Amino acid sequence: MRTNEGVAWRSLICAGITVQGLDMRIADWPADERPRERLLKLGAAALSEAELLAIFLRTGMAGSSAVELGRELLARFGGLNRLFGATLDEFAAVRGFGPAKYVQLQAVVEIARRARSDRALQAARREGAAQGEPAR
Image (cartoon, rainbow, N blue to C red; front, side):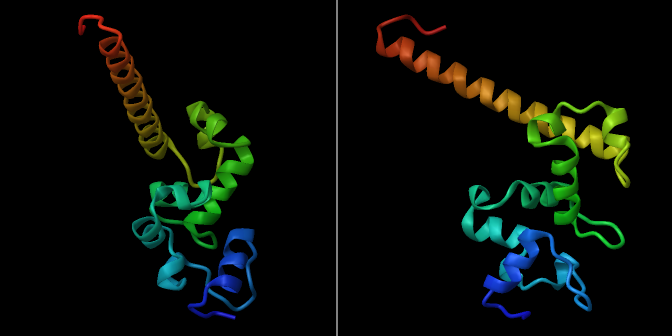
């Protein structure tokens, strides 16, 4: 079952199925199925939300890979938006998560918000310039 062909292996990983006798640490996955390597090869858009969170989390915990922890966060909060809007107390109620990881998550959310805001401002400036308005 554990081959570099990846189809059967990946379906087990994505479904969150733990197979008796297989060590499910990401380091033990076939190289082309690991989230970091997949991002480098295929781009961020090709990864699941759980895989993207796994890259952010960097490591799992005893008995849970970083992807499994990402899945747990998504299930607990009902998606990325609710996860991003969680309070420190809500976030820290999840086993293995505390203030340090919460601060990192909030920093990434703010960086993304600012980048989105910058893109919207640049688009508005381009649209204004195309209509002959002076640059601001």
